[in-house]
Length: 633
Image (cartoon, rainbow, N blue to C red; front, top):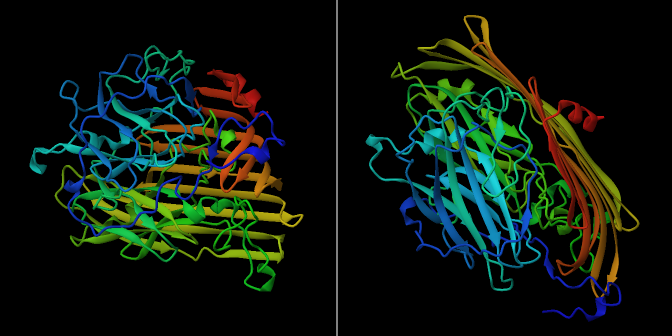
């Protein structure tokens, strides 16, 4: 262990903990893709020991609880239990899954619960769960600063019902396989992650007596009732109301390094060859993505010229300069999906901030937005169904524009089939994909300057499918607007980042020139960050940061004479300081206020968590729309 003596004069009472900055893929070692082979090579470990029982400090993600029937689960199933210690380079941990025989489908809700604890100091790690190669959760562990940290991740996974039902008889009697990848190391830090993964199956009406109840795990204080039945929240997450009939993984079929693809640059495309059923009438591609290595701070990556004025822009001693990167190509990234090399959709990824990023003290004990449950991105491919059901195999590809090493990506192809027809017909009738042109401007002199990237694009697809449901035309309009501004002053000691990404997707469904359905999803993800840096002595750097970021989404669905509307605003404001030495946080403090607001046409939910100096000073929730309105003012 390095000596801390020379810092004692600066911070005489604050050097009790040694904290580790996130490095690379949230602490995950580099991986390489293996040529696809048989998934059966996954290692099924022996039964693990019981997780540590000395968990005393709960880390949390203040979001909307899953909306469930008022009664307890019809049944609960512990699928996987494992202690992740030295797992770097090991294949995913795997466990057999079969649906519970005492409560078979259909289910009104299925909730995935990942409960975990850390035995001691450890880096934060990226992790994922796959069911038969299809991803159902992308998550990050906390940044444990002491023994006894525990946390829970709860996710409504009802949209994966096609997988959760298990394999049909004609697919064989083999059980499904639930796999989890979490590369952890005890070579330097002792923390072991003890993980339990359970599934809770619910049947019956979602609401009882006009009241809807959030999930209340055993031993947890009852949270506020969610008021009258929320009209939008009970719907299955995704573009359409009902779950798909089948889900096809677009992932690394080998699985020995995880089922995700690893992308090293913007020119690399990874994908899977798929042959769709001839009676497919609808298809949605759900994309999972996370950023690591040189792109951990992609949202703070400056755009710089290639002239001599860039030569002086070298990392400062002590490292952890968030405006440095191996390739200063700016703070813009775009996740792109292709079919047979043809663009079929894209999304600007939400800038998830990992628990060890920016300032680890911001995210203890409240996680950054999306860190415990990374968002996925739905791309409606229904206009392309006519091309996909020609009986030929098609290559579904994934790429990240402007990316640096490295990104982890995978996707699930949600497919709806016509139960009354063996074959359907269809065709793409409109395909308008103009280039996403970006205005890039940079003005740098040595370590001072600014850069801006700005642009927008509108994409339109339209196609028809003729099935037993009639001749239905689906039209998709997708608008993306992006702006990034990064500035450095005082020889790089003062830096600021402003990022704003907006997207709006409109889907119109018509039959015989009559509109029978509409979907509108609008998202906005602003981020601002200002940092003042100074020499901390002995090769260390002192950073004082103020950060604000948010995820706002409105969603409306009108289908089969039913309508729903919802609006979510999830915002965090953080401020604090950290002393870094060679990527290690030697000392720090942080305050974070999280405000989560949800509303629809029948109810509201508001939760406010205020953390000061690592202690929760306020944690209040309410179903009062009046209180939510006050919070918005």
